[in-house]
Length: 123
Image 1 (cartoon, rainbow, N blue to C red):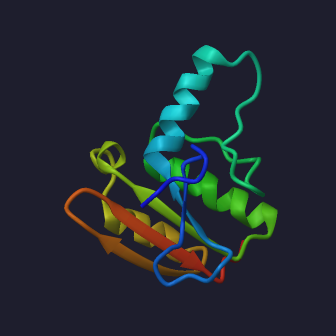
Image 2 (cartoon, rainbow, N blue to C red):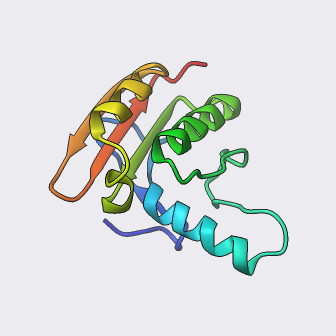
C-alpha cells in the first residue's frame, strides 16, 4: 500500500466506501513522538476532519481517541492499520471489541498487522 504524501493515510480500506482511507497508527504515533522534539506547538496528523485526535502510547486508548475524534467530526467510516509496534501492546480482539462500540466492525489480520474498519460510526 502506498502512503499519500507522508500523512500516514493510505488509499482504500477493507469493506468501506470512498470516504475511508486507511490510517497507519504506528506511523502516526511515531510522527507524534518526533513532533514532541521538533515542533514547538501543536501536532497535526494531517488527516482531514480528525484535528482533535492525539495518539497515545497505549494503542487501545489511542484507538478510542481516534474513534472519539471521528464521532466529533461526523465521520461515518474509519479504517486503521495497526502494525508490529502497536500489536506488541494490544491484540486484534480488543481492537475489534472497542470498534464494535462505535459501529459495524471488520478486522483483517495478517502475520504482521491488523486492519480494522468501522462504518456506521455513532457516538
